Image (cartoon, rainbow, N blue to C red):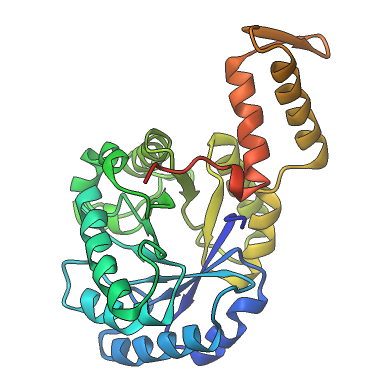
Length: 298
């Protein structure tokens, strides 16, 4: 299944839960963390469990659940409430390193076994840049097992954690701290052979800005993007779907190298192409077919 658009939906709002699977997002993230107040978290767990039970797999959209950080007393309660209902994955907020993803994997092993679910069925997407320490550990995700599906980043919690007054420059672009976090997330995902997922574009009313932001994300190497509002989903899906001409060119490049297996360079339409062009063509084809995307070895 494609993993272009990842839509956050508050876990405690019944009306939004009921509409979630009809929006067209590739992944719906039912949120138990930031969008749910402390007093509403037990209700949110119950509602998310009920929603998952009412919509068993296979679903029109994959369903991930963002739990609370592992350092809080809520995380295990979240997992106890939802794993037996069979979510497709867990979004892990505020990890300091891959060790937190490994720890979550151990918890999932136990909860899956208790629920009679296949081992390793539930995948993990860490929001890998939300703490200051996390910036120094992005390379550690190479050592995590096969539960990881990708890495994403955030532009809100990290600036707050270091005492920054804003995450933007005067021209509206990200601060140096956020730009570094984004780059390290992208490089960390590539090093671990995981899917890099771009962070949210907060102004959901500004379609032109979202289009430009998503296009820039795909240009830089991201294969999908988080969304905070349903109206963002079709824009994101379009931005991360290769155009027919782009796909055809990529097929030609791959076919040309396949027909010349000993060649380091080939010529197509008057241009010389080498192995980096082949990798780019393979990535374009992979973005149109999830089964072709590289995954971390189990």
